[in-house]
Length: 255
Ligand SMILES: [Zn+2]
Image 1 (cartoon, rainbow, N blue to C red):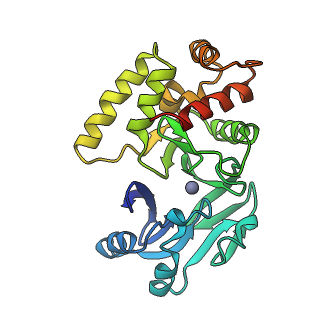
Image 2 (spheres, helix red, strand yellow):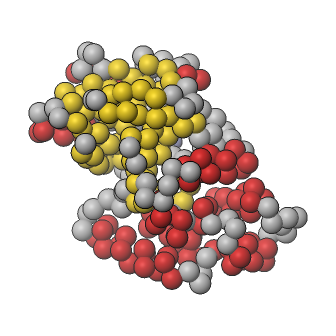
């Protein structure tokens, strides 16, 4: 298996999962950058995997269908109204096979109520649930749902590789440094991400281990993050959901 990162639009990432001469695309924001890579590598695109219905994740589907008539489109069964092009609706914990590879589905409500993550071996395609040093905004779900969704991702093991939907890592790390100021791993990651970005390299994928060390949304039990939040907000408790909600609100107002 080979994964190719395909930058799309302004800061989106689509991914090609390649096995032999077949490929599946994750979150095709637009068609032409995906078709360009497929043509260069002589690949046949057999499937599109859609993490959620936002247009910057599915905008390329109609043009891809024009080019690849047999393209199967996988998405959450409850997203069929919002992604009418889905041909293969999947449920939570479903397992299916594309390009000879097993794909597992994890329902991760929070950013949207119908968001899913695709796991291929230890590669997690997390869409807008988790980002480098951040997580998605809560457009449809609650803080409680998102905490549960992130916990399910964490169950996949520290060595999992995290392929996220947007290049937000550097900005997220600036926020992380503010809320978690005594964490040296954040300074180290800022330096390494700057190097990548200056060389025009994506900061995706990361590993869950790296996120556990630097992503404040996965560190909601950390004493210094909780202390910082208690100074900023009147927290009525320090349970994980309350801490997460305060952190998410502070991130929404961060600029
Ligand atoms: Zn989204």
